[in-house]
Amino acid sequence: TSHALVARAANGEWLVGEAAQMQAHKNRGNTFANLLYLIGKKADEVGKLPNGTVADETTGFIKLVVEASADGSAEECVKKPEELLAMVLERCKELAENHVGGKVGPTVLTVPLVLTPEQRVLVAAAGQSIGLDI
Image (spheres, rainbow, N blue to C red):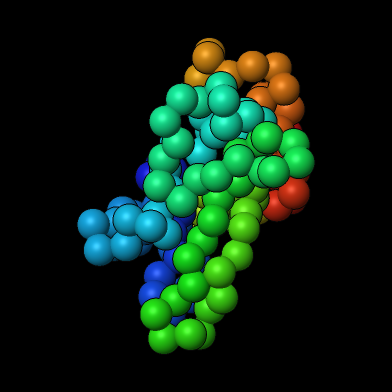
């Protein structure tokens, strides 16, 4: 398994899983967790928004603001939660392929029961965007 954390390091590199967790205490503004619960939600459905999370002005859906790096090598950017979830799923896919020694075939993703049908569709779409056969 992989920790469902995504972060952008000071040098602009994207970190996923354990690497993101290891630097989270130093880089709270650019470390994102609980992505599954933010997918497809509007800001008013969440209550208190986590660090770096804002509502889209036109749709009200949550978006994640990734701060610029201190050395200027990476600019501020805005990502949807499902884009960062795709990074987590890609890391899980890499771990599975390393474990089996080849490509993974059809994939079953288990998600928490509290996710709505719309959120489940977005999770599946995130998996399909990185080449998983879901």
